[in-house]
Length: 349
Image (cartoon, rainbow, N blue to C red):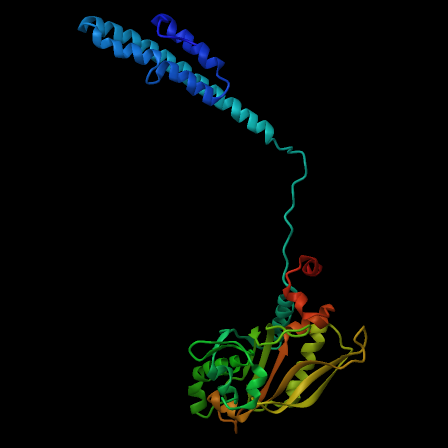
């Protein structure tokens, strides 16, 4: 402590002792105020200079400034010492044992549905099929009308879905890519078609997300589908059976399964058929399982592609990627794919 009667020559020593006794930055600021504050000892001495004559004021002012410099130096030194002490305390409190093994960050992996999709793309790619991608928000024309499903067609009730403004809909299947891809293909080869020459075949698959108002153990409002299309001058149901059998055997890595076609109805194919498979072994042995819809592309759909149905024909199919993944990985509830449960998903790493 100090007071106003402390000699100037002793102020620096008094201040140094008070600063050294301050154990915290707050205590140090209190000690500073006693010397350098508005009513501090040095401040009061500076105020008294006005009572001196010019010569004495000059000498006394120099003496006070010299002491003030010593006090400020002592103050800064103590501030630095307290800061270093605090840093040392924090380092000790937050010390790391570098000899401990590091914490590993778990490696991510592809979702099982994405694994199935990539497998499908690879298999059809090996057969010469392109992979097409398109918008998930579709126009009524591409999603329905161009696929021979006009506004008054009863088949639309099977595709009840989510509508958005501007005559658009969340696509109910990836079949709109039939039209989109075929129209681009025909436009690129129109000069050959008009000249009566053979147009390169259209051979494409379109995997992706689709949407319908449906939700249970085997259906989801959002699901994944792969559309397949092969158009040429001599593509028949025989080619469909050969291609799909080859695909399904490669996908499940088994030759011990059967394929059958059941008559069905789809407005964009004629004739139409459901595709069922039956495994020759395993827990599903002996059971027919529906995996796809298919058929010969309807003549009106061929016309909507910009082609002559008297010359060009082909087949199309649509398979549920989620269902194929369920069969491949032995999953009995579709909702498990979308619950985000890491205990389930970690099995596929």
